Amino acid sequence: MHGDQQSHDEVASVHIRVLSEVVGREHELELALATVAAGRDPVLEGPPGTSKTTMLKAITAEWDIPLLFVEGNGDLTPAKLIGHHNPARVLREDYSPENFVPGPLVEAMEEGGFLYVEEFNRAPEDTLNTLLAAMADRAIAIPRVGMITAKQTFRVIASMNPYDAVGTTRLSTSISDRLNRIVVDYQEAAEEERIVILRAGLSDAGAQPLAADAVAVTRATRTHPSVRQGSSVRGAIDCALILKALLALRGVTPQGQRPDEPYAAVVLDAMMVALSGRIRLDEAAETTPERVLREIWEDRFMLEPAAYAGAT
Image (cartoon, rainbow, N blue to C red; front, side, top):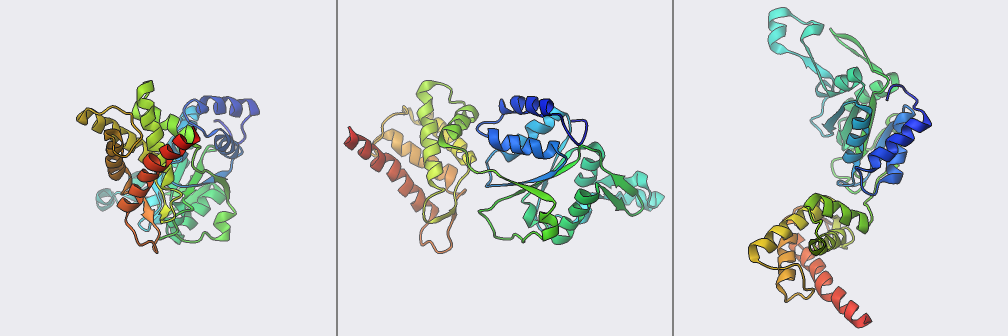
């Protein structure tokens, strides 16, 4: 990317190439590409594990620009974002531009990269105001250093999780007015299965039922009435990997859809390890992650096979 506005052909060709690295994100990728190519700063709103970082890595790799990652939290001060003077050199040489250590914001501005602020709405207000100045003016003034002017390819990319409001702050109108919102929700089941097959190395046809089971139970955590936030596809990937390893350790083959068969018992163990720490229960729920997962397991291995048998 060599300028603020990109040609239609260039953006379209990048879109095609990046799609080969991202599963099931054609529409969202198109929106993100159009936004950054137009010189705007997007906010990607969606739960964790929905390929937001993967998309940004692929885009910045195509444009050969850096992607600098920052986690938004209460400890992200303006100084950590902008940078600081090297204390040892200050004692020897006093303050000077040469002993300034740039933070991720200044690095992104000077190198023309993307500054990706995850959990943007968890950062303190004064830190968000610092980002606002950089977004609005494409330049910031640093005492004893001078004016830092961003290269044309500099962008601030924010992300927010709409399912988790604990510890977050409401964005001011001035901040929201600078961001272009792109909703990135969970992929479809078939797309998540493709991701799990790829990431867990389940390319053999005999191993692919592991991906189907891992994705099905993981997706069920997102709709369970006692769960405030379910697991992302990362939980399904780990569930499939642990399931694959447990089957090998126990000498069990991936077949059998009844709860009294060895395969089903191995699935339950893999679920407990991979998913129990990833789900967030509703505050009013009088249950435990283990009970919720067992209910989901029973639905998968008791109710679903029974319904299928009844249909035939």
